[in-house]
Image: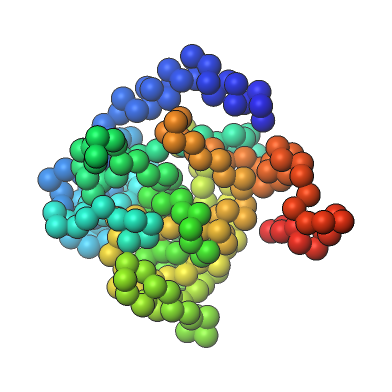
Length: 84
Length: 176
């Protein structure tokens, strides 16, 4: 465990984590899609819909696998604490 | 297929509610992870919030319908969520989760009792709580690294070999 922790602090690992953070942040990906259900795959929005059911149907119709679903907050929604 | 070796490390994600804008001069970051729930059918992946403050693993009602499970009305409790008292009904599902850079065949999967929440409007469809998630792994969160790591559930005892109960009372030691 300590060896892993030392490795995590190593320059090489930190660089890899910095590469991770160079991807488009989640908040920016969802910008302009307020209130919609979004499917994200490989750091890109691949589908959007008004309801989660419509989104799942769309993904299955298009044969898109491996996308992860999230809801873009509406404009008036505040930052949540915990579960909201 | 063998499960991917630990540690599984996940970077924090920017909170979509603030669209990447800093709050009080600092980024708002969340411990989020992609996971999949399945029962009779498999769900698409969803983003899930890792929440040590929740006793239960919870999911939105639509997830139950997509995976083909009917939450049990005999396993119902009321939880205070977002200032409201919401009904939560539980069902047994399989949770799939693993490193983002690994094919899902190398993910872990386990049975869990998940509470499905009516009328819940949140950003993340799933919340990973003490039961069904924190009882499966040792979860290490680090704000400085902007990441969290999952390791074996008994890793905690190896890292901190201090008995929590006097006289080695093993009955107080939790095991999943």
